[in-house]
Image (cartoon, rainbow, N blue to C red; front, side, top):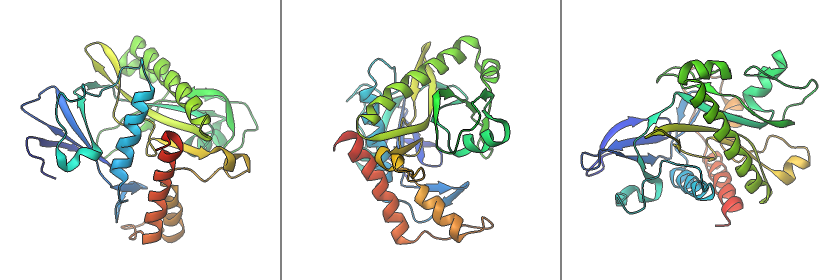
Length: 281
Protein backbone atom coordinates (compact mmCIF):
# COMPACT_ATOMS: atom_id res chain seq x y z
CA UNK A 1 0.00 0.00 0.00
CA UNK A 2 1.36 3.42 -0.97
CA UNK A 3 1.05 6.24 1.58
CA UNK A 4 2.04 9.74 0.50
CA UNK A 5 5.09 10.99 2.41
CA UNK A 6 5.93 7.52 3.76
CA UNK A 7 8.05 4.67 2.37
CA UNK A 8 7.19 1.05 3.09
CA UNK A 9 10.07 -0.69 4.91
CA UNK A 10 8.70 -3.92 6.39
CA UNK A 11 5.65 -6.17 6.54
CA UNK A 12 4.94 -8.67 9.29
CA UNK A 13 2.02 -11.07 9.61
CA UNK A 14 -0.34 -8.21 10.49
CA UNK A 15 1.55 -4.90 10.58
CA UNK A 16 3.25 -2.82 7.91
CA UNK A 17 5.96 -0.30 8.82
CA UNK A 18 6.74 2.94 6.98
CA UNK A 19 9.56 5.49 7.27
CA UNK A 20 9.65 9.16 6.31
CA UNK A 21 12.57 11.39 5.39
CA UNK A 22 10.69 14.26 7.01
CA UNK A 23 10.51 12.37 10.32
CA UNK A 24 13.64 10.18 10.51
CA UNK A 25 13.12 9.26 14.17
CA UNK A 26 9.50 8.15 13.69
CA UNK A 27 7.83 5.04 12.27
CA UNK A 28 4.30 4.72 10.92
CA UNK A 29 2.87 1.40 12.10
CA UNK A 30 -0.23 0.28 10.18
CA UNK A 31 -2.31 -2.70 11.30
CA UNK A 32 -3.91 -4.67 8.48
CA UNK A 33 -6.95 -6.95 8.46
CA UNK A 34 -4.73 -9.93 7.58
CA UNK A 35 -5.23 -13.14 9.53
CA UNK A 36 -2.82 -16.06 9.73
CA UNK A 37 -2.82 -19.50 11.31
CA UNK A 38 -0.39 -22.40 11.25
CA UNK A 39 2.19 -20.20 9.46
CA UNK A 40 -0.15 -19.46 6.54
CA UNK A 41 -1.77 -16.21 5.53
CA UNK A 42 -5.50 -16.83 5.13
CA UNK A 43 -8.22 -15.48 2.88
CA UNK A 44 -10.32 -13.50 3.23
CA UNK A 45 -9.04 -11.03 5.86
CA UNK A 46 -11.11 -10.21 8.95
CA UNK A 47 -12.91 -6.91 8.24
CA UNK A 48 -12.07 -4.13 10.69
CA UNK A 49 -9.42 -6.22 12.49
CA UNK A 50 -6.66 -3.63 12.01
CA UNK A 51 -8.73 -0.87 13.56
CA UNK A 52 -9.80 -3.08 16.46
CA UNK A 53 -6.22 -4.10 17.27
CA UNK A 54 -5.02 -0.49 17.08
CA UNK A 55 -7.88 0.76 19.26
CA UNK A 56 -7.15 -1.87 21.91
CA UNK A 57 -3.40 -1.18 21.95
CA UNK A 58 -3.98 2.55 22.34
CA UNK A 59 -6.45 1.94 25.17
CA UNK A 60 -4.00 -0.29 27.01
CA UNK A 61 -1.10 2.13 26.58
CA UNK A 62 -3.36 4.73 28.21
CA UNK A 63 -4.07 2.43 31.17
CA UNK A 64 -0.41 1.68 31.79
CA UNK A 65 0.71 5.03 33.14
CA UNK A 66 4.31 5.02 34.33
CA UNK A 67 5.38 2.38 31.80
CA UNK A 68 7.39 4.05 28.99
CA UNK A 69 5.89 3.23 25.58
CA UNK A 70 6.77 3.91 21.96
CA UNK A 71 3.90 6.27 21.06
CA UNK A 72 5.05 9.58 19.61
CA UNK A 73 3.71 12.78 21.18
CA UNK A 74 0.10 13.33 20.04
CA UNK A 75 -0.12 15.67 17.07
CA UNK A 76 3.62 15.83 16.46
CA UNK A 77 3.20 13.88 13.21
CA UNK A 78 -0.21 13.68 11.56
CA UNK A 79 -1.66 10.27 10.79
CA UNK A 80 -2.34 9.77 7.06
CA UNK A 81 -6.08 10.01 6.53
CA UNK A 82 -6.35 6.72 4.61
CA UNK A 83 -5.05 4.68 7.57
CA UNK A 84 -5.81 6.95 10.52
CA UNK A 85 -8.06 4.45 12.29
CA UNK A 86 -5.58 1.60 12.14
CA UNK A 87 -2.21 3.27 12.51
CA UNK A 88 0.12 4.74 15.11
CA UNK A 89 3.12 7.04 14.75
CA UNK A 90 5.76 5.66 17.08
CA UNK A 91 9.35 6.31 18.07
CA UNK A 92 12.07 4.46 16.22
CA UNK A 93 13.58 2.08 18.79
CA UNK A 94 16.45 -0.36 18.92
CA UNK A 95 14.33 -3.48 19.49
CA UNK A 96 15.46 -6.33 21.75
CA UNK A 97 15.35 -9.77 20.07
CA UNK A 98 13.15 -11.16 22.85
CA UNK A 99 9.43 -11.88 22.98
CA UNK A 100 8.59 -11.38 26.63
CA UNK A 101 5.90 -13.98 27.30
CA UNK A 102 4.03 -14.06 30.61
CA UNK A 103 1.69 -16.90 31.51
CA UNK A 104 -0.85 -16.79 34.31
CA UNK A 105 -2.58 -19.97 33.16
CA UNK A 106 -1.34 -23.22 31.63
CA UNK A 107 -2.48 -23.36 28.01
CA UNK A 108 -1.32 -23.59 24.40
CA UNK A 109 2.32 -24.50 23.85
CA UNK A 110 2.92 -24.23 27.60
CA UNK A 111 0.47 -27.07 28.22
CA UNK A 112 2.16 -29.20 25.54
CA UNK A 113 5.58 -28.67 27.10
CA UNK A 114 4.29 -29.24 30.65
CA UNK A 115 2.98 -32.69 29.71
CA UNK A 116 6.47 -33.64 28.57
CA UNK A 117 8.64 -32.06 31.27
CA UNK A 118 6.39 -30.68 34.06
CA UNK A 119 7.97 -27.31 33.28
CA UNK A 120 7.63 -24.44 30.80
CA UNK A 121 10.78 -22.85 29.35
CA UNK A 122 12.82 -24.25 32.21
CA UNK A 123 10.39 -23.01 34.89
CA UNK A 124 9.36 -26.04 37.03
CA UNK A 125 5.65 -26.28 37.83
CA UNK A 126 3.65 -28.36 40.35
CA UNK A 127 2.51 -31.84 39.36
CA UNK A 128 -1.09 -32.59 38.48
CA UNK A 129 -1.99 -29.41 36.60
CA UNK A 130 -4.61 -29.61 33.85
CA UNK A 131 -5.00 -27.74 30.58
CA UNK A 132 -6.27 -24.25 31.43
CA UNK A 133 -5.39 -24.33 35.14
CA UNK A 134 -4.32 -21.11 36.81
CA UNK A 135 -0.66 -21.20 37.82
CA UNK A 136 0.38 -20.56 41.45
CA UNK A 137 1.81 -17.27 40.21
CA UNK A 138 2.49 -15.81 36.74
CA UNK A 139 5.68 -17.05 35.10
CA UNK A 140 8.00 -15.33 32.63
CA UNK A 141 8.80 -17.58 29.67
CA UNK A 142 10.71 -15.61 27.00
CA UNK A 143 11.20 -16.52 23.37
CA UNK A 144 13.91 -15.61 20.87
CA UNK A 145 12.59 -13.57 17.93
CA UNK A 146 13.87 -15.52 14.98
CA UNK A 147 14.76 -13.87 11.65
CA UNK A 148 12.03 -13.60 9.03
CA UNK A 149 11.00 -17.03 7.73
CA UNK A 150 12.15 -18.91 10.84
CA UNK A 151 10.15 -19.98 13.89
CA UNK A 152 10.50 -18.16 17.20
CA UNK A 153 12.16 -20.33 19.82
CA UNK A 154 11.25 -20.62 23.50
CA UNK A 155 14.34 -19.98 25.60
CA UNK A 156 15.38 -19.92 29.24
CA UNK A 157 16.03 -16.76 31.22
CA UNK A 158 19.74 -17.62 31.24
CA UNK A 159 19.67 -17.55 27.44
CA UNK A 160 18.15 -14.03 27.49
CA UNK A 161 21.06 -12.95 29.68
CA UNK A 162 23.43 -14.22 26.98
CA UNK A 163 21.48 -12.33 24.30
CA UNK A 164 20.95 -8.93 25.96
CA UNK A 165 22.99 -8.89 29.17
CA UNK A 166 22.00 -9.47 32.79
CA UNK A 167 20.72 -5.97 33.53
CA UNK A 168 18.45 -5.73 30.50
CA UNK A 169 17.25 -9.33 30.89
CA UNK A 170 16.23 -8.69 34.50
CA UNK A 171 14.48 -5.44 33.62
CA UNK A 172 12.55 -7.07 30.76
CA UNK A 173 11.31 -9.76 33.14
CA UNK A 174 10.43 -7.23 35.82
CA UNK A 175 8.50 -4.95 33.45
CA UNK A 176 6.70 -7.86 31.79
CA UNK A 177 5.46 -9.26 35.08
CA UNK A 178 4.41 -5.80 36.27
CA UNK A 179 2.41 -5.02 33.13
CA UNK A 180 0.80 -8.47 33.19
CA UNK A 181 -0.22 -8.03 36.84
CA UNK A 182 -1.73 -4.60 36.23
CA UNK A 183 -3.52 -5.68 33.07
CA UNK A 184 -4.85 -8.86 34.71
CA UNK A 185 -6.44 -6.84 37.50
CA UNK A 186 -8.09 -4.46 35.02
CA UNK A 187 -9.39 -7.34 32.89
CA UNK A 188 -10.65 -9.23 35.94
CA UNK A 189 -12.68 -6.21 37.04
CA UNK A 190 -14.48 -6.47 33.69
CA UNK A 191 -15.17 -10.19 33.88
CA UNK A 192 -12.29 -11.17 31.58
CA UNK A 193 -9.33 -13.45 32.30
CA UNK A 194 -5.92 -12.61 30.83
CA UNK A 195 -4.44 -16.10 30.51
CA UNK A 196 -1.17 -15.19 28.81
CA UNK A 197 0.38 -12.52 26.61
CA UNK A 198 3.61 -11.43 24.97
CA UNK A 199 5.33 -8.06 25.03
CA UNK A 200 8.09 -6.53 22.95
CA UNK A 201 10.47 -3.85 24.18
CA UNK A 202 13.04 -1.58 22.63
CA UNK A 203 15.75 0.80 23.75
CA UNK A 204 14.90 4.51 23.61
CA UNK A 205 17.97 6.50 24.70
CA UNK A 206 18.80 3.94 27.44
CA UNK A 207 15.15 3.65 28.52
CA UNK A 208 13.55 0.22 28.10
CA UNK A 209 10.31 1.01 26.29
CA UNK A 210 7.14 -1.01 25.64
CA UNK A 211 6.61 -1.27 21.88
CA UNK A 212 4.62 -2.82 19.05
CA UNK A 213 1.09 -3.94 19.96
CA UNK A 214 0.17 -4.52 23.59
CA UNK A 215 -2.42 -6.82 25.16
CA UNK A 216 -4.41 -7.27 21.94
CA UNK A 217 -6.43 -10.29 20.83
CA UNK A 218 -3.51 -11.26 18.56
CA UNK A 219 -0.82 -11.11 21.25
CA UNK A 220 -2.85 -12.37 24.20
CA UNK A 221 -5.17 -15.18 25.25
CA UNK A 222 -8.31 -13.82 26.92
CA UNK A 223 -11.20 -15.85 28.36
CA UNK A 224 -14.65 -14.91 29.57
CA UNK A 225 -14.46 -15.41 33.35
CA UNK A 226 -18.03 -16.70 33.64
CA UNK A 227 -17.57 -19.19 30.80
CA UNK A 228 -14.26 -20.32 32.29
CA UNK A 229 -15.95 -20.88 35.67
CA UNK A 230 -18.53 -23.09 33.95
CA UNK A 231 -15.72 -25.39 32.79
CA UNK A 232 -15.19 -24.24 29.19
CA UNK A 233 -11.54 -23.29 28.77
CA UNK A 234 -11.50 -23.04 24.98
CA UNK A 235 -13.67 -20.00 24.16
CA UNK A 236 -11.01 -17.32 23.80
CA UNK A 237 -11.45 -13.78 22.42
CA UNK A 238 -9.24 -14.27 19.39
CA UNK A 239 -8.91 -16.27 16.17
CA UNK A 240 -9.41 -19.65 17.85
CA UNK A 241 -12.60 -19.98 15.80
CA UNK A 242 -10.42 -19.86 12.68
CA UNK A 243 -7.95 -22.42 14.05
CA UNK A 244 -10.75 -24.81 15.02
CA UNK A 245 -12.34 -24.58 11.57
CA UNK A 246 -9.01 -25.23 9.84
CA UNK A 247 -8.28 -28.25 12.04
CA UNK A 248 -11.66 -29.71 11.08
CA UNK A 249 -11.45 -28.89 7.37
CA UNK A 250 -7.77 -28.97 6.35
CA UNK A 251 -5.00 -31.55 6.70
CA UNK A 252 -2.38 -28.76 6.85
CA UNK A 253 -0.82 -29.78 3.54
CA UNK A 254 -0.73 -27.39 0.60
CA UNK A 255 -2.52 -24.07 0.70
CA UNK A 256 -5.29 -23.62 3.30
CA UNK A 257 -8.91 -23.34 2.13
CA UNK A 258 -10.76 -20.03 1.92
CA UNK A 259 -12.51 -19.19 5.18
CA UNK A 260 -16.33 -19.33 5.07
CA UNK A 261 -18.20 -16.04 5.57
CA UNK A 262 -19.71 -17.14 8.88
CA UNK A 263 -16.27 -18.03 10.33
CA UNK A 264 -14.96 -14.60 9.29
CA UNK A 265 -17.90 -12.78 10.88
CA UNK A 266 -17.83 -14.83 14.09
CA UNK A 267 -14.11 -14.09 14.46
CA UNK A 268 -14.64 -10.37 13.90
CA UNK A 269 -17.45 -10.44 16.47
CA UNK A 270 -15.12 -11.96 19.10
CA UNK A 271 -12.57 -9.20 18.50
CA UNK A 272 -15.31 -6.57 18.86
CA UNK A 273 -16.75 -8.18 21.97
CA UNK A 274 -13.41 -8.12 23.79
CA UNK A 275 -12.98 -4.39 23.16
CA UNK A 276 -16.53 -3.70 24.31
CA UNK A 277 -15.98 -5.77 27.48
CA UNK A 278 -12.65 -4.14 28.35
CA UNK A 279 -13.20 -0.52 27.32
CA UNK A 280 -16.97 -0.16 27.61
CA UNK A 281 -16.96 1.46 24.16
